[in-house]
Length: 201
Image 1 (cartoon, rainbow, N blue to C red):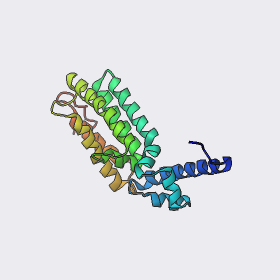
Image 2 (image 1 turned 120 degrees about the horizontal axis):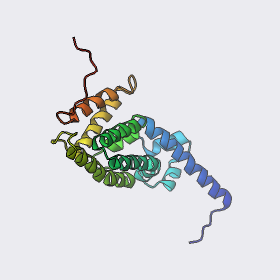
Image 3 (image 1 turned 180 degrees about the vertical axis):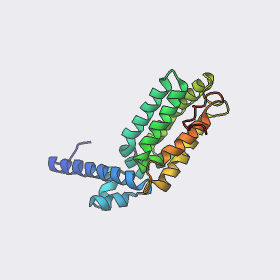
Image 4 (image 1 turned 120 degrees about the vertical axis):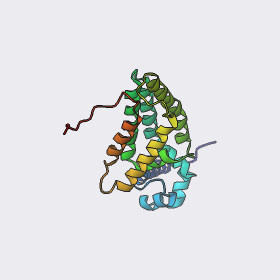
């Protein structure tokens, strides 16, 4: 099909697309996944039809906005799974994942969604799941992770921490770190507890 758009029209379309992505990125990060296409149009100062021309569905916009962050999450999981120390890799993955979510409410929402509908989130989860399973199996084989811990527990821990972040972000955005440490301490196999930092009485 012949492209009938004039160069000025194409430049306008490119500018609008960039504006929409910038606006949506900020809004999803600060307000979460409840942001609608109409909300984005209003904040960007364009008609809602302009949004739909570039992103026919909200999932199309989510794919564009979160592609980079989801790729970083997958890379983090690959690095953690490749660590020869299973415990260290698993803890590092949890710490990295939650640090990314700490700065982005929309990413927290995607991580906590049982069955995300946007393609990039589905792809990322499909790639990360077997990597987490490798981390867990390695740490258990090495005797550092409790034997009744399951790979799905990693996702549930993230859901719990995301809820803590949402509840405390306005007043204590880093409070989740305390609860993450509690989860990590509870994951350890018997005989692999870190020594207490408290002085004896």
